[in-house]
Image (cartoon, rainbow, N blue to C red):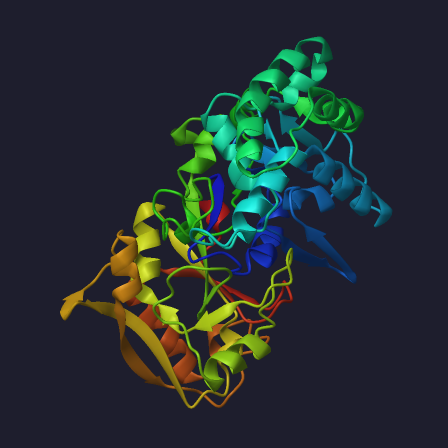
Amino acid sequence: MANVVVVGAQWGDEGKGKIVDWLSEQADVVVRFQGGHNAGHTLVIGDKVYKLSLLPSGVVRPNKLSVIGNGVVLDPHALAAEVERLTEQGVAISRENLRVAENATLILSIHRELDALRESGSAGTKIGTTKRGIGPAYEDKAGRRAIRLMDLADLSSLRDKIDRLLTHHNALRRGFGLDEFTPEAIYDELSSVAPKVLPYMDAVWRLLDDERRAGKRILFEGAQGALLDVDHGTYPFVTSSNTVAGQAATGSGLGPGAVGYVLGIAKAYTTRVGEGPFPTELFDETGELIGQKGKEFGVVTGRKRRCGWFDATLVRQTVRTSGIDGIALTKLDILDGFETIKIGVGYKLDGEVIDYFPASQGAQGRVEPIYEEFEGWSGSTAGARSWADLPAQAVKYVRRIEELIGAPVAVLSTSPERDDTILMKNPFEG
């Protein structure tokens, strides 16, 4: 049996919640390996709706171990609040089913303020962050001045680490004309929340290796999408972590051999939240209609998503950078009823036809999409659970996507309901 990595194959918001929930039912361990509480998803189990931002999806299911890996930047207050909220919904959360990497970097109030200052400022380029401190926390991690979860277990040594952190941050705050943070304020912030999060702390790398050696099924759950990867995405309009499948190993403490089947999640069209290039974006009534039918608003922020046609060139690129073995194609039913449907199959850049998305920010802004146009379908795909239930044109559309991206559709989702799924291959069966 293979372990499974789930990654978004576009700019996030691909409908990972339903797919991860379905896979988590089969898994023994569910691991978050990057990002923070800036990316959320909704799980619907029976008549209950759970909105998760930081906790792995397995936490809402009994007898599953959920793990927050070292690749995650952890807001301890957000974690405590999410645990409290789910507890009120009847979910039992304890050390028995939740562990957090001792070497996970913490997000502090100083990070949230800095994030908001940068994003709200008039100078420079707005990235479209959620202002939750994710980027500044990753900066401190790379700058070797971060405070990590394990530091809360030794409060006597915390003050020296706070001083080192504030040497950097107070210089920035002086530049913004703001009052400096005092060491006492940061110490009080951390010492007050320590009892709420330390019970979950563990050496996650060792725990996961033990689980792997015991033959347990591990599901690695990514946040956001591969096109937001800090190296392989639409830089600088990206998140501050690696979101591609390779990060599942680095962000959990396991070797790359532990990563098995890579399942990419992609919508049957494309959406994006925030700033940045989007070659197939629609600015007309069609784009508005896709957004309305697809209920395209962010789980965490409520922000309206930009909508456009499926861009096969982009997804083909993420298939390669993440080593995607199969695609879960979601929200096919949103395209029901369109007279014609388009797929982006390439670009023109300065008059030249290219078959990849360039890395240069300037070139990304200049590319023009090349489309193939398809006849739409009048029948409904909503709720389909077999190929026989799909209109012929819908099948043709899916098969053409497979050809263009160089990966098979392993799972086809036709509604938010977990059972409205056409399964071609179970990723856990390798």
